Length: 219
Image (tube, rainbow, N blue to C red; front, side, top):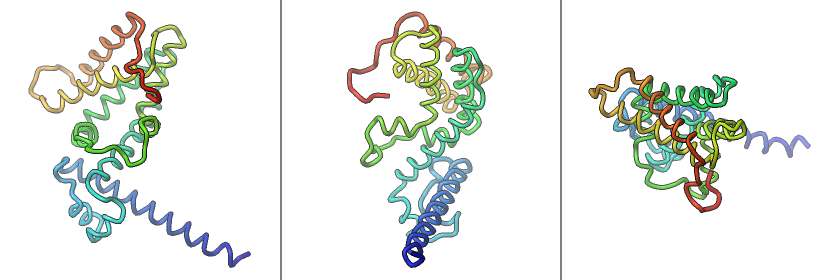
């Protein structure tokens, strides 16, 4: 029996080591983006930062696009953890708390936000449906859950996906403008995002919201 288990254990160790090295590369990519922005993220610079040969990086990521997707998945997970920390009992306040955390993430990490949310993703992840992509975005799922709680409490009415998408659109638009037009007199940045979010919530609460599309497997 020991002879049977050894190859499996060796394979598990290799997989664990590969996962650890990939995580190290993703962490280094985050650091590069924070320090130098999107333009500073290159395979060569990433390899130098972790002390690998560039060809070693290519064994984990085929190109910069795949690194961007890994950064996005990692950022979504971190953002979701932050958003879940604060959940007031009032369902609308819980939505506002999630938006506040989203705003803080974007405004406190402008280079990372710009790279993850404001660079074109030229191709979707290979072999993933839209539903699978959404389930892999835990930050959006937090907003969805809180919108659904508002619907259950009778505070909002209509399609949860449409409302969560609208809130994300509004928050993202405000944060993007604050990052790209810092000289505009928006006032306090985080307060501005919340003000725009409150306007969106008031608009959503004014009537029943229809689905965005008739296509199946959306949200």
